[in-house]
Length: 384
Image 1 (tube, rainbow, N blue to C red):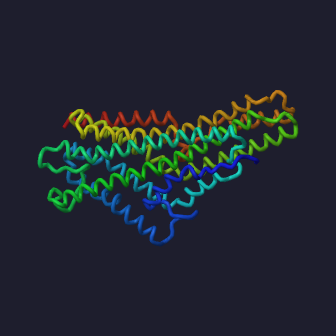
Image 2: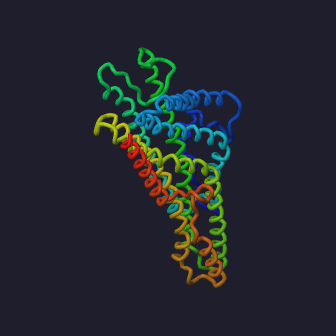
Image 3: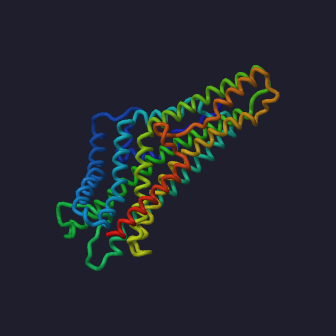
């Protein structure tokens, strides 16, 4: 198909650079190979993710009879576990991850005119703006985590950003300062894993939505001549199959990430809500936990929002065909067009195992689940 060359992969440049610095994006078009970069990743993940997960699980054993402390660990532990899972899943599926991005270079996915390029740039601009907002929110959240133990603690009290077991007395200097720095670095590393991995995933969804925008534009601008109309319709059918195949490949890669996010997000939001009821309102610790809760809230909301965007735009394809000048098309083209419309009435969805769909309805269900967790913990607290 003739069109205007557009570099889709250039939009992921910032995310890829950060992930490469974190050890999560080997150079070239291939997956990981045994060498320095793999050792580099192993050291970072072991130090900042595996280590803190192990220390928090040990601490869970020691505070099992203290509901407040137990919940205090449970509300941060899922985020670290999810980060570890993302690292494992991205590393073991790096070739598939890169192929999803490389597929966008296909000639079928190129805009045909300046109008379609503007449609792309509008969606990409929105995605980048959301990334900047979430990145700033992450920095703000981590800043609260750093300052609240210092500002909220009584004079001489040495607190850490989050609870964990350490095989030494961390309240003795300089062990306290070193442990504090370790938790700060851990928090930032885990945050960067989530933000940049998620936004590459969101970006793939945005690109899929842009493809449906361009397909709809193609359908609205059919040629009236018999020969050209048939060619245009055939191109649209092939194009739709290409987009559907691309979305299925993305869903195949994302399925386990989607499942675990949907499961853990509801629990984490509910636990965070419960913790807020145990804190002094408007204290630094309160704001720290509030910002953390909003971070998890927006994370799962964006998964559902960008997934829902793909479904909504794919649902407009059949409508776009009706908006074309189909009344003047040849009879045989009308017949083929009607079959195409019937086959595109079922929207294309980002899903896991065709059960867990990324949509705004799913997001509402997650919030209801979060409230159930909150109500359960609140009831247990009252009983204790």
